[in-house]
Image (cartoon, rainbow, N blue to C red; front, side, top):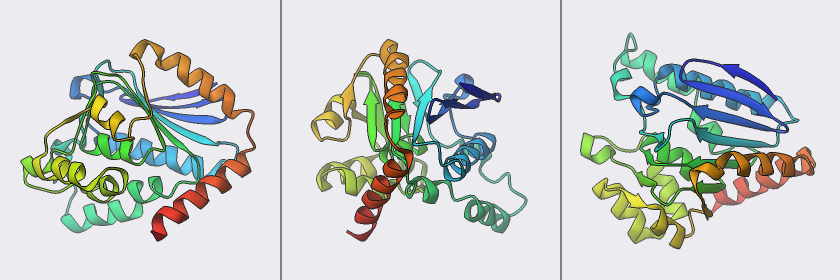
Length: 224
């Protein structure tokens, strides 16, 4: 296993999977420009390293997956146009939603805003029973900008999706499990074991076949 350490986020190559691990405890894993750059680096690595056959999002911070985008970074670009160009050049959410490997999220605690949008873009979601999920952007006067409003309507019944987007109120793990979004409810202490099992299992599968299968799923979703 190789690891590239940074201050608030790390990329970990484990067997044939790549882990993106959040660790910005003092800011509840709010995704700032630096974290965004590292996520982009991870996505590019998945695209270029054909031996990688899964992407796994997790967090070192107990009780927090991610509180969303760091709003303190808003307006720090030299101009609105430069900020827009940067997003277009590094379209994290476009790449994430079209990635040709399965995406897994291990969630403990809050997954709000961009954190929930990562979950919604995932193929398989593990979560603790105390986790909470929300798209609170409406309370701040803007809309989910990373595809949350489009993803949620695909993943959940219309009535539940609208309530989450229109009210900004959190929804529980239990309810999302009932709706089929959460695949497994597990304890946080089991995360490392489950990740180890998953990574070892992935070694048994042909990377090319996994990527081909995921690409077919993406195509079906995008054409429906």
